[in-house]
Length: 145
Image (cartoon, rainbow, N blue to C red; front, side, top):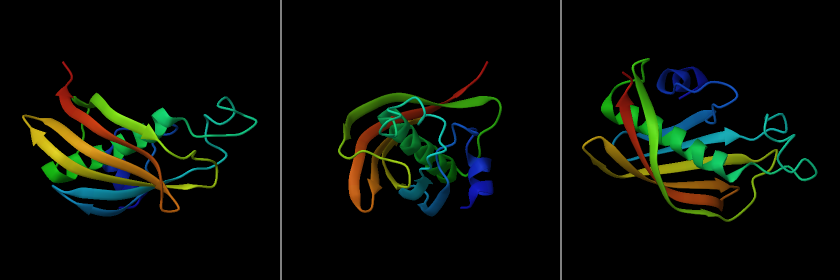
């Protein structure tokens, strides 16, 4: 999926869109995507400006955005103005390696379960084949009233 297709499957926009390309998506199973991390990211001037590091919460958010694409592709739909894709929980988050400008953050997300609209995913973020972060993510789609 290129950026135009990603924009159809995520409500996020700059500066909060954290998926640049989807390399592989197997609906009902897994997704492989990436985020190119640039020195121009809006968070770097304020997050350790002397040694820029991507905030861990944004790495987890990037995994969640990849998970959202996988969810919508699995369901055969797209987000709309009447629904929101929410985090419900983050379990076992671990950060193993700093992510810095120039890195390509590979996002691997697999579906562990989907029961009554509650999705559980296993997510891993890697740089150059090395684990940067991992977590189990719980997400759901809710209608806006």
